[in-house]
Amino acid sequence: MAHGHNSNEKVVFVGDSRVKKSNHPNIPPDYTSFPGKSEAFIPNFLLKEWMVGCVVLVGFLVWVIAEPAPLGYPADPTNAAFIPMPDWYFLFLYQFLKYPYVSQDYILLGTVGIPGVMFGALLLAPFLDTGKERRFYRRPIASSLMGLTLIACVYLTVVSWDHYQHQLEINGQVPEHIEREEKAREAAEAGQERPNYTKPAVEAALVDANDPAMDIAKQAQCVSCHAADLKGQGSVPSLVGVGDHMTKEQLVEVVTNGRNGMPAFAETLSAEEIDQLTTWLSKQKAATE
Image (cartoon, rainbow, N blue to C red; front, side, top):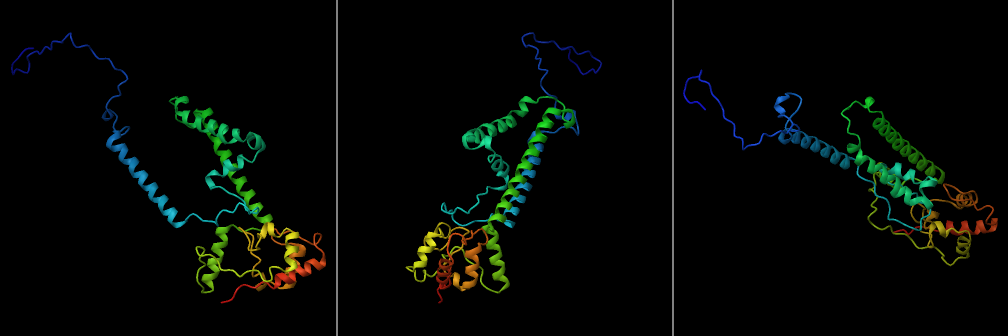
């Protein structure tokens, strides 16, 4: 190479044959070559993702605090009137498992097979769909599959919720968390203390538990819903203290014709048995302090 301070002097670089020429066409150019179209992953892109994650997390925490998850009564396997329901984001799968070809003898297919294929396809989608086109109408297969999946999830969720509301209406049931909210609101409007469900309720014992009417109650299978001690279970009310808020005439009407999911006993019990049973139930008074 020539030396000197003359700017017009020709400079010749001599290559070293021992250094092989590198040829890496797959190396992307520096992001500064495309101003406004690209950016560095660290720290530019990572900072944006972190900020978005913080906003989503704060919004989620505010939502959880504003609408706490409702807590029901302790699980009771003997309560045949209870209608199980999963969280809303599993409703589509809950409804899907009600269909005959993915339940009962095919339960393994419904719980492992089909969900495994669906989630597996979702994980493999970036590797299977490697086209450069990003406009959805230019990607008919991927767009159609995604659209069908969304439609199926929304449809199954809506059908599951409608079926649940229909079952509640048929059984005359009120969900536990809604029942608690109504009782709390009624207590607040009446200026009373809010009901505390963490404390066990103090109930009176059955009046004349050895009365022959108890045998009639067992014969009518009342104990299968109201429990052996007639103190109720789950959403089925207790009969201890029923005489405080129902007269004998009202009890006769309920036992004879049924109400709120309770069957009618007009054809099961005779008029004398109904009269004897309701007379005994009208004597059931709650303990007074």
